[in-house]
Length: 345
Image 1 (tube, rainbow, N blue to C red):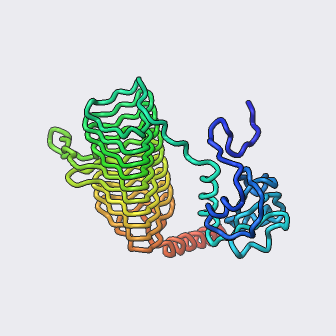
Image 2: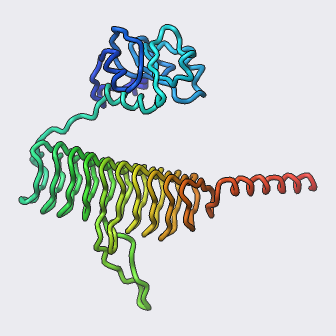
Image 3: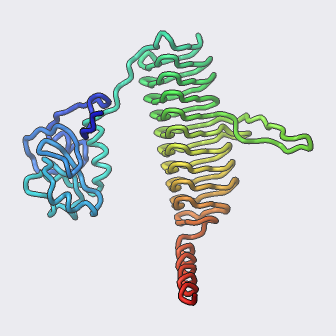
């Protein structure tokens, strides 16, 4: 098996270079001295050569910056003096965002290939924009509306009545039902959107399922990772706000309300009717009990178990979760006690 490292292997990624420095600087929304050079692509500091762009966003890699052979480097103003004289300095206060834009310039998402594959199953009354792409063996239900330039990958199932805006990307084996999707929504392979929420009544004879008659609403620019699930609401809608990002293997229960630009890292579980306000961030494996509110801009550390409301802007950690300073004091106290007992024995 070939193991040579390649930046942007052409077998998998569409390349748009080489590009002039001016185009790269414009994409980065940054500043650089005017030079007439062409740049072929992007690469890490350690492997970049004279026709590649690299970047520094973490001072841990300053030694790599000192030795880089990159033709151009995106850096914060604080690190300009560390860039070798052989590299062109591209200066911005947000180097990682600039890097993201430059990477997308060299490796843009492939455009939709308009048309419906002959093996796709499409309801007669489905409304599919002629610029959209419907892949092999996809299933498009009755009353579906698919907007311009959407891409529906092979074996995806779009249930009856689903609507999606423009430029959505629906991955392979995704299922979407009882859902409304905004513009530029991305669902990675295996994601499940709009299925029944986990709702049932307990009776003397067992469990009685409660009909789930809400919807799942994903606003503009939402991304849902591979094998993640967003249940539809029971009586009201489940909502994921504009710009929010759900990592792989995230579970969002019925009636949950997630605000704008929230981040839920892998294996987060959100119980029903919980509200997560704008710009909140939840680390990996965080679990939230139901009917809670996580305030705007709150940050919850990995593996925390949240059983009460979290105030806006707070940082919580632990299980049960508590303010991070209280948690760290508790850890320090416990360690002192352990060391004291160890000395006694």
